[in-house]
Image (cartoon, rainbow, N blue to C red):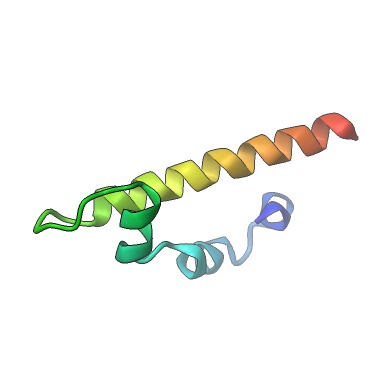
Length: 64
């Protein structure tokens, strides 16, 4: 994903490819399986992974 910061072409396709499926997202955010929509779990998982990515990117930039 870091390459897309410099070259944004293909970013949407990459995001679709990395979008968590409902079961994976529910497990990752320790959600419960019930009749409620899964989209909030998917958004939460995506935000958590984005935050981890941003932290790794900042650490990498500080080292350079």
